[in-house]
Image 1 (cartoon, rainbow, N blue to C red):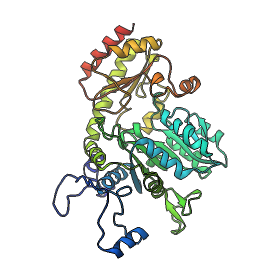
Image 2: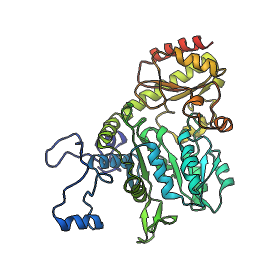
Image 3: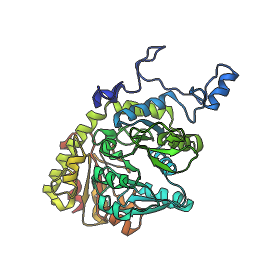
Image 4: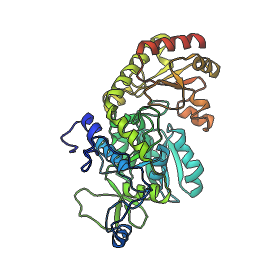
Amino acid sequence: MDDRTHGFATRALHAGTPPDPVERSRAMAIHATAAYAFRDAAHAAAVFAGDDDANQYGRMHNPTTDAFAERMRSLEGGVGAVALASGQAASAAVLLALARPGARVLLSREAFGGTFALFRRWLEPWGVRCTTVAPTAEAVGAAMGPDVAAVWVETIANPSLTVPDLPAVAAVAHAVGVPLVVDNTWGCGGYLCRPLAQGADLVVHSATKWIGGHGTFLGGVVIDGGGFACDATGGAVRPVESGAAAVTDVVPVWQRVGELGLFTIGATLSPYAAALALQGLETLEVRCARACASAAALAAWLAERVGPHAVGYPGLPGHASHAVARRVLQGGFGSVVTLDLAGRAEAFRFLDALRVFSLVANVGDAKSLAVHPGTTTHAGLTEAERAAAGVRGGTVRLSVGLESVDDLRADLAAALAAAA
Protein backbone atom coordinates (compact mmCIF):
# COMPACT_ATOMS: atom_id res chain seq x y z
CA MET A 1 0.00 0.00 0.00
CA ASP A 2 1.40 3.38 -1.05
CA ASP A 3 2.00 5.65 1.96
CA ARG A 4 1.62 8.72 -0.26
CA THR A 5 -1.80 7.98 -1.76
CA HIS A 6 -3.74 6.42 1.11
CA GLY A 7 -4.97 8.10 4.28
CA PHE A 8 -4.03 7.23 7.85
CA ALA A 9 -7.23 5.32 8.62
CA THR A 10 -6.93 3.28 5.41
CA ARG A 11 -3.32 2.33 6.13
CA ALA A 12 -4.21 1.46 9.73
CA LEU A 13 -6.52 -1.19 8.25
CA HIS A 14 -4.56 -2.42 5.24
CA ALA A 15 -0.82 -1.67 5.37
CA GLY A 16 1.31 -4.81 5.59
CA THR A 17 -1.59 -7.24 5.25
CA PRO A 18 -2.74 -7.91 1.67
CA PRO A 19 -4.98 -10.97 1.18
CA ASP A 20 -3.13 -14.25 1.63
CA PRO A 21 -1.93 -15.22 -1.87
CA VAL A 22 -2.51 -18.95 -1.32
CA GLU A 23 -5.54 -19.39 0.95
CA ARG A 24 -7.04 -15.95 0.13
CA SER A 25 -7.66 -15.30 3.82
CA ARG A 26 -8.42 -11.59 4.34
CA ALA A 27 -7.34 -11.47 8.00
CA MET A 28 -3.62 -11.76 8.72
CA ALA A 29 -2.76 -15.32 9.69
CA ILE A 30 -1.09 -16.03 13.03
CA HIS A 31 2.13 -17.84 12.16
CA ALA A 32 2.63 -19.91 15.30
CA THR A 33 5.98 -21.39 14.42
CA ALA A 34 9.40 -21.41 16.04
CA ALA A 35 11.33 -22.37 12.91
CA TYR A 36 11.11 -22.63 9.12
CA ALA A 37 11.79 -25.45 6.66
CA PHE A 38 14.51 -24.89 4.08
CA ARG A 39 14.26 -26.20 0.53
CA ASP A 40 17.56 -28.04 0.83
CA ALA A 41 20.94 -27.81 2.56
CA ALA A 42 22.23 -25.21 0.12
CA HIS A 43 19.21 -23.02 0.79
CA ALA A 44 19.78 -23.25 4.56
CA ALA A 45 23.41 -22.25 4.10
CA ALA A 46 22.41 -19.28 1.91
CA VAL A 47 19.86 -18.06 4.44
CA PHE A 48 22.34 -18.20 7.32
CA ALA A 49 25.01 -16.52 5.21
CA GLY A 50 22.66 -13.63 4.49
CA ASP A 51 22.55 -14.37 0.75
CA ASP A 52 18.83 -15.23 0.86
CA ASP A 53 16.30 -13.18 2.84
CA ALA A 54 14.01 -16.11 3.63
CA ASN A 55 12.92 -16.59 7.24
CA GLN A 56 15.73 -18.05 9.31
CA TYR A 57 14.39 -18.61 12.83
CA GLY A 58 11.44 -17.48 14.91
CA ARG A 59 13.51 -15.35 17.25
CA MET A 60 14.20 -12.91 14.42
CA HIS A 61 11.54 -13.62 11.80
CA ASN A 62 7.80 -14.10 11.78
CA PRO A 63 5.35 -13.05 9.04
CA THR A 64 2.67 -11.91 11.51
CA THR A 65 5.12 -9.81 13.50
CA ASP A 66 6.67 -8.42 10.32
CA ALA A 67 3.22 -7.35 9.12
CA PHE A 68 2.67 -5.39 12.32
CA ALA A 69 6.07 -3.70 11.97
CA GLU A 70 5.33 -2.81 8.36
CA ARG A 71 1.98 -1.28 9.27
CA MET A 72 3.63 0.86 11.95
CA ARG A 73 6.35 1.89 9.50
CA SER A 74 3.63 3.09 7.15
CA LEU A 75 1.66 4.95 9.82
CA GLU A 76 4.74 6.75 11.16
CA GLY A 77 6.27 7.39 7.73
CA GLY A 78 9.58 5.61 8.35
CA VAL A 79 12.01 3.63 6.21
CA GLY A 80 11.99 0.53 8.38
CA ALA A 81 10.56 -0.83 11.63
CA VAL A 82 11.17 -3.59 14.16
CA ALA A 83 8.58 -5.07 16.54
CA LEU A 84 9.75 -6.27 19.95
CA ALA A 85 8.38 -7.92 23.06
CA SER A 86 7.49 -4.71 24.93
CA GLY A 87 7.93 -0.97 24.86
CA GLN A 88 10.72 -1.38 27.40
CA ALA A 89 12.48 -3.86 25.10
CA ALA A 90 12.12 -1.43 22.20
CA SER A 91 13.65 1.39 24.25
CA ALA A 92 16.53 -0.81 25.41
CA ALA A 93 17.35 -1.98 21.89
CA VAL A 94 17.38 1.59 20.55
CA LEU A 95 19.68 2.83 23.32
CA LEU A 96 22.04 -0.11 22.84
CA ALA A 97 22.15 0.61 19.10
CA LEU A 98 22.93 4.30 19.56
CA ALA A 99 25.19 4.49 22.63
CA ARG A 100 28.53 2.95 23.58
CA PRO A 101 30.44 3.02 26.89
CA GLY A 102 31.71 6.53 27.43
CA ALA A 103 28.79 8.11 25.60
CA ARG A 104 26.10 10.28 27.12
CA VAL A 105 22.36 10.45 26.41
CA LEU A 106 20.29 13.57 27.05
CA LEU A 107 17.07 12.26 28.59
CA SER A 108 13.98 14.32 29.28
CA ARG A 109 13.65 14.75 33.03
CA GLU A 110 9.93 14.04 32.54
CA ALA A 111 10.46 10.64 30.90
CA PHE A 112 8.73 7.38 31.81
CA GLY A 113 10.07 5.82 35.00
CA GLY A 114 10.97 2.64 33.13
CA THR A 115 13.31 4.61 30.87
CA PHE A 116 15.12 5.92 33.93
CA ALA A 117 15.40 2.32 35.13
CA LEU A 118 17.10 1.28 31.89
CA PHE A 119 19.89 3.71 32.62
CA ARG A 120 20.26 2.99 36.32
CA ARG A 121 20.16 -0.79 36.12
CA TRP A 122 21.80 -1.45 32.78
CA LEU A 123 23.26 1.40 30.75
CA GLU A 124 25.03 3.35 33.49
CA PRO A 125 26.75 0.24 34.94
CA TRP A 126 27.78 -0.53 31.34
CA GLY A 127 29.33 2.93 30.99
CA VAL A 128 26.65 5.01 29.25
CA ARG A 129 25.85 8.15 31.21
CA CYS A 130 22.49 9.89 31.40
CA THR A 131 22.01 13.64 31.70
CA THR A 132 18.44 14.66 32.51
CA VAL A 133 17.24 17.90 30.95
CA ALA A 134 14.02 19.81 30.50
CA PRO A 135 12.47 18.75 27.15
CA THR A 136 13.19 22.09 25.49
CA ALA A 137 15.54 23.14 22.72
CA GLU A 138 17.30 25.55 25.08
CA ALA A 139 17.97 22.92 27.74
CA VAL A 140 19.11 20.37 25.18
CA GLY A 141 21.46 22.89 23.59
CA ALA A 142 22.97 23.86 26.95
CA ALA A 143 23.68 20.22 27.86
CA MET A 144 24.98 19.19 24.44
CA GLY A 145 28.59 18.04 24.05
CA PRO A 146 30.81 15.89 21.83
CA ASP A 147 30.08 12.80 23.93
CA VAL A 148 26.31 12.93 23.40
CA ALA A 149 24.99 9.96 21.41
CA ALA A 150 21.27 10.74 21.42
CA VAL A 151 18.53 13.01 22.70
CA TRP A 152 15.41 11.31 24.12
CA VAL A 153 12.03 12.99 24.70
CA GLU A 154 8.38 11.95 24.84
CA THR A 155 5.59 13.33 22.65
CA ILE A 156 3.43 13.84 25.73
CA ALA A 157 5.27 13.41 29.02
CA ASN A 158 3.98 10.97 31.63
CA PRO A 159 2.28 12.33 33.69
CA SER A 160 3.12 16.06 33.44
CA LEU A 161 1.66 16.06 29.91
CA THR A 162 4.40 18.41 28.71
CA VAL A 163 4.56 18.53 24.91
CA PRO A 164 8.04 19.41 23.57
CA ASP A 165 8.60 21.54 20.49
CA LEU A 166 9.87 18.62 18.40
CA PRO A 167 11.11 20.63 15.38
CA ALA A 168 13.09 22.95 17.66
CA VAL A 169 14.65 20.12 19.67
CA ALA A 170 15.47 18.25 16.45
CA ALA A 171 17.20 21.31 14.99
CA VAL A 172 19.47 21.61 18.03
CA ALA A 173 20.36 17.91 17.93
CA HIS A 174 20.96 17.83 14.19
CA ALA A 175 23.20 20.90 14.31
CA VAL A 176 25.83 18.70 15.98
CA GLY A 177 24.96 15.42 14.22
CA VAL A 178 23.01 13.81 17.07
CA PRO A 179 19.79 11.79 16.52
CA LEU A 180 16.53 12.66 18.24
CA VAL A 181 14.55 9.72 19.63
CA VAL A 182 10.89 10.29 20.49
CA ASP A 183 8.85 7.94 22.63
CA ASN A 184 5.57 8.41 20.79
CA THR A 185 3.52 6.00 22.89
CA TRP A 186 1.20 8.79 23.99
CA GLY A 187 1.03 9.97 20.38
CA CYS A 188 -1.49 7.16 19.88
CA GLY A 189 0.24 5.11 17.19
CA GLY A 190 0.79 8.19 15.01
CA TYR A 191 -2.82 9.40 15.23
CA LEU A 192 -1.97 12.41 17.43
CA CYS A 193 1.59 12.98 16.31
CA ARG A 194 4.06 11.69 13.72
CA PRO A 195 7.43 12.82 15.07
CA LEU A 196 9.46 11.74 12.03
CA ALA A 197 7.64 14.39 10.00
CA GLN A 198 8.69 16.96 12.59
CA GLY A 199 12.39 16.20 12.59
CA ALA A 200 12.73 13.15 14.84
CA ASP A 201 15.00 10.32 13.70
CA LEU A 202 13.65 7.32 15.62
CA VAL A 203 10.25 6.65 17.15
CA VAL A 204 9.52 4.17 19.94
CA HIS A 205 6.11 2.89 21.00
CA SER A 206 4.74 0.69 23.70
CA ALA A 207 2.18 -1.10 21.54
CA THR A 208 0.51 -2.26 24.75
CA LYS A 209 -1.18 1.14 25.07
CA TRP A 210 -3.25 2.89 22.38
CA ILE A 211 -2.01 0.69 19.51
CA GLY A 212 -3.49 -2.46 21.04
CA GLY A 213 -6.10 -0.50 22.90
CA HIS A 214 -7.56 -3.28 25.02
CA GLY A 215 -4.87 -4.19 27.57
CA THR A 216 -4.53 -7.73 26.21
CA PHE A 217 -0.82 -8.04 25.36
CA LEU A 218 2.65 -6.56 25.79
CA GLY A 219 4.48 -5.26 22.74
CA GLY A 220 6.77 -2.57 21.40
CA VAL A 221 7.93 -1.21 18.08
CA VAL A 222 10.73 1.00 16.75
CA ILE A 223 10.39 3.05 13.55
CA ASP A 224 13.45 4.51 11.81
CA GLY A 225 13.24 7.77 9.86
CA GLY A 226 16.41 6.97 7.89
CA GLY A 227 18.37 10.07 8.84
CA PHE A 228 21.14 8.17 10.64
CA ALA A 229 22.97 4.89 10.11
CA CYS A 230 25.20 2.62 12.19
CA ASP A 231 28.74 1.62 11.28
CA ALA A 232 28.69 -1.94 10.00
CA THR A 233 31.35 -2.85 12.59
CA GLY A 234 29.04 -1.83 15.43
CA GLY A 235 30.69 1.53 16.08
CA ALA A 236 29.34 5.04 15.95
CA VAL A 237 26.03 6.25 14.57
CA ARG A 238 26.35 8.98 11.95
CA PRO A 239 24.02 11.12 9.84
CA VAL A 240 23.05 10.00 6.36
CA GLU A 241 23.62 12.88 3.96
CA SER A 242 20.67 13.60 1.70
CA GLY A 243 21.47 12.77 -1.90
CA ALA A 244 24.81 11.18 -1.04
CA ALA A 245 25.94 8.08 -2.87
CA ALA A 246 25.16 4.80 -1.14
CA VAL A 247 27.87 3.54 1.18
CA THR A 248 28.54 -0.06 2.11
CA ASP A 249 30.09 0.35 5.55
CA VAL A 250 26.84 1.27 7.34
CA VAL A 251 23.59 -0.46 8.21
CA PRO A 252 20.21 1.17 8.91
CA VAL A 253 19.55 1.88 12.57
CA TRP A 254 16.37 -0.20 12.50
CA GLN A 255 18.39 -3.17 11.28
CA ARG A 256 20.90 -2.77 14.13
CA VAL A 257 18.00 -2.50 16.58
CA GLY A 258 16.69 -5.81 15.25
CA GLU A 259 20.11 -7.47 15.49
CA LEU A 260 20.47 -6.43 19.11
CA GLY A 261 16.88 -6.69 20.30
CA LEU A 262 15.88 -9.88 18.50
CA PHE A 263 18.94 -11.90 17.44
CA THR A 264 21.16 -11.03 20.42
CA ILE A 265 18.80 -10.44 23.35
CA GLY A 266 15.81 -12.41 22.13
CA ALA A 267 13.16 -9.83 23.05
CA THR A 268 10.85 -11.32 20.43
CA LEU A 269 7.22 -10.28 20.03
CA SER A 270 4.84 -13.25 20.03
CA PRO A 271 2.87 -13.67 16.78
CA TYR A 272 -0.28 -13.86 18.92
CA ALA A 273 0.54 -10.42 20.37
CA ALA A 274 1.34 -9.12 16.88
CA ALA A 275 -2.07 -10.25 15.66
CA LEU A 276 -3.74 -8.40 18.55
CA ALA A 277 -1.70 -5.30 17.70
CA LEU A 278 -2.81 -5.47 14.07
CA GLN A 279 -6.40 -5.85 15.16
CA GLY A 280 -6.06 -2.89 17.51
CA LEU A 281 -4.70 -0.68 14.77
CA GLU A 282 -7.82 -1.30 12.68
CA THR A 283 -9.88 0.79 15.11
CA LEU A 284 -7.10 3.15 16.24
CA GLU A 285 -8.42 6.33 14.68
CA VAL A 286 -12.01 5.78 15.83
CA ARG A 287 -10.97 4.89 19.38
CA CYS A 288 -8.51 7.73 19.79
CA ALA A 289 -10.86 10.36 18.39
CA ARG A 290 -13.54 9.39 20.90
CA ALA A 291 -11.16 9.05 23.86
CA CYS A 292 -9.53 12.41 23.15
CA ALA A 293 -12.91 14.12 22.84
CA SER A 294 -14.06 12.61 26.13
CA ALA A 295 -10.81 13.59 27.86
CA ALA A 296 -11.19 17.17 26.66
CA ALA A 297 -14.75 17.31 27.98
CA LEU A 298 -13.78 15.85 31.35
CA ALA A 299 -10.75 18.12 31.68
CA ALA A 300 -12.91 21.20 31.09
CA TRP A 301 -15.49 19.95 33.60
CA LEU A 302 -12.83 19.19 36.23
CA ALA A 303 -11.25 22.60 35.73
CA GLU A 304 -14.60 24.20 36.53
CA ARG A 305 -15.17 21.86 39.48
CA VAL A 306 -11.78 22.00 41.26
CA GLY A 307 -10.03 24.89 39.51
CA PRO A 308 -7.78 24.90 36.43
CA HIS A 309 -4.62 24.93 38.57
CA ALA A 310 -5.43 21.40 39.76
CA VAL A 311 -6.09 19.88 36.32
CA GLY A 312 -3.43 18.92 33.79
CA TYR A 313 -4.40 18.61 30.14
CA PRO A 314 -2.61 20.09 27.09
CA GLY A 315 -5.96 21.04 25.57
CA LEU A 316 -6.69 23.49 28.37
CA PRO A 317 -5.62 27.04 27.44
CA GLY A 318 -3.87 27.46 30.78
CA HIS A 319 -1.62 24.41 30.39
CA ALA A 320 2.05 25.30 29.99
CA SER A 321 2.29 23.29 26.76
CA HIS A 322 -0.97 24.38 25.18
CA ALA A 323 0.56 26.63 22.51
CA VAL A 324 3.18 24.03 21.52
CA ALA A 325 0.62 21.22 21.60
CA ARG A 326 -1.54 23.09 19.10
CA ARG A 327 1.39 22.96 16.65
CA VAL A 328 2.84 19.52 17.42
CA LEU A 329 -0.34 17.48 17.92
CA GLN A 330 -3.21 16.84 15.52
CA GLY A 331 -6.66 15.40 15.99
CA GLY A 332 -6.81 16.22 19.70
CA PHE A 333 -4.69 16.69 22.80
CA GLY A 334 -4.53 13.14 24.09
CA SER A 335 -6.75 11.04 26.31
CA VAL A 336 -4.91 11.41 29.63
CA VAL A 337 -5.87 13.98 32.27
CA THR A 338 -4.10 14.57 35.59
CA LEU A 339 -5.71 15.78 38.77
CA ASP A 340 -3.77 17.27 41.69
CA LEU A 341 -5.53 16.73 45.00
CA ALA A 342 -4.40 18.04 48.38
CA GLY A 343 -2.18 15.07 49.18
CA ARG A 344 -1.67 11.34 49.13
CA ALA A 345 -4.50 10.56 51.56
CA GLU A 346 -6.99 12.49 49.44
CA ALA A 347 -5.70 10.81 46.27
CA PHE A 348 -6.13 7.37 47.81
CA ARG A 349 -9.70 8.15 48.93
CA PHE A 350 -10.45 9.43 45.43
CA LEU A 351 -9.09 6.30 43.77
CA ASP A 352 -10.82 3.92 46.18
CA ALA A 353 -14.19 5.57 45.47
CA LEU A 354 -14.03 5.10 41.68
CA ARG A 355 -16.40 2.53 40.21
CA VAL A 356 -16.20 3.00 36.43
CA PHE A 357 -12.52 3.92 36.24
CA SER A 358 -10.34 0.89 37.03
CA LEU A 359 -7.32 1.22 39.34
CA VAL A 360 -4.70 0.01 36.86
CA ALA A 361 -1.10 1.02 36.11
CA ASN A 362 -1.66 1.36 32.38
CA VAL A 363 -2.93 3.88 29.82
CA GLY A 364 -4.52 3.76 26.39
CA ASP A 365 -7.09 1.08 27.18
CA ALA A 366 -10.65 1.07 25.85
CA LYS A 367 -11.64 1.09 29.54
CA SER A 368 -10.93 4.17 31.64
CA LEU A 369 -8.06 3.74 34.10
CA ALA A 370 -6.74 5.63 37.11
CA VAL A 371 -3.58 5.40 39.20
CA HIS A 372 -1.48 7.25 41.78
CA PRO A 373 1.88 7.69 39.97
CA GLY A 374 3.85 8.64 43.07
CA THR A 375 3.40 5.20 44.64
CA THR A 376 3.26 3.12 41.45
CA THR A 377 4.72 4.06 38.07
CA HIS A 378 7.14 6.66 39.49
CA ALA A 379 7.78 5.12 42.90
CA GLY A 380 11.35 4.22 41.92
CA LEU A 381 12.36 7.86 41.39
CA THR A 382 13.71 10.17 44.05
CA GLU A 383 11.44 12.88 45.42
CA ALA A 384 13.30 15.49 43.38
CA GLU A 385 12.97 13.40 40.21
CA ARG A 386 9.26 12.92 40.81
CA ALA A 387 8.83 16.66 41.25
CA ALA A 388 10.71 17.33 38.00
CA ALA A 389 8.44 14.83 36.24
CA GLY A 390 5.32 16.60 37.51
CA VAL A 391 4.44 13.97 40.12
CA ARG A 392 3.24 15.38 43.42
CA GLY A 393 1.83 13.64 46.47
CA GLY A 394 -1.76 14.18 45.40
CA THR A 395 -1.34 13.61 41.67
CA VAL A 396 -3.81 11.19 40.08
CA ARG A 397 -3.48 10.09 36.45
CA LEU A 398 -6.67 9.41 34.51
CA SER A 399 -6.57 7.52 31.21
CA VAL A 400 -9.92 8.16 29.56
CA GLY A 401 -11.50 5.31 27.64
CA LEU A 402 -14.61 4.77 25.57
CA GLU A 403 -17.39 4.69 28.17
CA SER A 404 -20.22 7.20 28.18
CA VAL A 405 -18.74 10.54 29.17
CA ASP A 406 -21.74 11.13 31.43
CA ASP A 407 -20.94 7.96 33.38
CA LEU A 408 -17.29 8.96 33.67
CA ARG A 409 -18.24 12.43 34.88
CA ALA A 410 -20.56 10.98 37.53
CA ASP A 411 -17.84 8.57 38.66
CA LEU A 412 -15.36 11.42 39.05
CA ALA A 413 -17.90 13.56 40.90
CA ALA A 414 -18.53 10.80 43.45
CA ALA A 415 -14.78 10.24 43.91
CA LEU A 416 -14.17 13.97 44.43
CA ALA A 417 -16.84 14.00 47.11
CA ALA A 418 -15.21 11.01 48.82
CA ALA A 419 -11.80 12.71 48.70
CA ALA A 420 -13.00 15.98 50.23
